[in-house]
Length: 375
Ligand SMILES: Cc1cc2nc3c(=O)[nH]c(=O)nc-3n(C[C@H](O)[C@H](O)[C@H](O)COP(=O)(O)OP(=O)(O)OC[C@H]3O[C@@H](n4cnc5c(N)ncnc54)[C@H](O)[C@@H]3O)c2cc1C
Image (cartoon, rainbow, N blue to C red):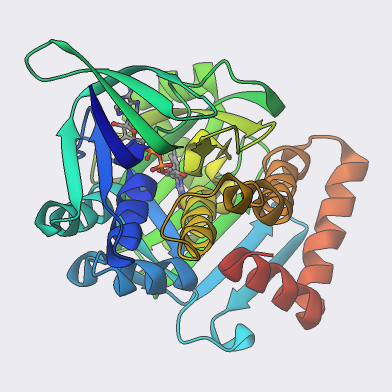
């Protein structure tokens, strides 16, 4: 049986960037993932400038494959429009859009070249936590079962393997995000749109010369529209894109199920949960990976203090991450549910809220800065 100092399960953007950060600190890391080739994942992510800066420090930012976001416009039918610009919060750009697969590949290229990181392509079947060590059971490429023990096990597997761990919050939105690349007659000018029109939050992200649509719709409707492009075009134009001169689809829409989960605790004995293993949020606020990368920064900061893994050091991680994660989760859940309410009073309040946001630069500045830099 092999023993390793640190094992990370999951080589998504969170696990890969943590491996790089720890290797830069002189630590030896073993990373296990079952599906490192992400080319079939159609997601395009909006990442805050703080996330871009962090990935660039790790040489894991795909500079030539990104699009800058300079303005976000939030609106809902008939009641209010609010704009947050990079200038209004004192930044050159608010953030960038980038393909999920390109971020993963840029980080994987660095990981593959780093002698301190051992990469294992395998499916983890089970993990055990313990006072002396944690244990990872995995099935290797030759389909034979293997076991590794470790001083510290970091779970960055997106929450799938530990799905049944106790949750503080669990909510099924009964929605799917319909994601596709679209072209509008008007150019994007670096502007992202968030639209609350009643059928489900619609996000348009500038990407290259076009937009990526992330439309959260009731599951049955999303599945039906996925295979009926002309109805989708008609509905989308009616809801919003007529004002941009009409829409054309450049890619086939793909569906992602939407849920909210927040784990009850992130730190066990020798096992820590980060990224989507700790929290999964609705994409309406584009915050999932931004939160995960802040998990990486805080955890690597804690581990930098000592060469040896000390349980007394790592137990503070939960406390250090709870406030930021809870604030983002509450804000996102509010956007995903309350702003779409068909109730007239709530409709007027949300209109007032959006108008207030646009008229109150300090509030707007606080919201924008919290989402960009965390709390
Ligand atoms: C439609 C959509 C749009 C989004 N938009 C945004 C956005 O604009 N901005 C933003 O910040 N976030 C966004 N997100 C959220 C973002 O994608 C996630 O927060 C982010 O991918 C989490 O990264 P992760 O590394 O924690 O987990 P994941 O990306 O889920 O990676 C988990 C890794 O673990 C591996 N794995 C899983 N199980 C096992 C196992 N048993 N054995 C071995 N390996 C395993 C997988 O192969 C994978 O590589 C969006 C999400 C969706 C669905």
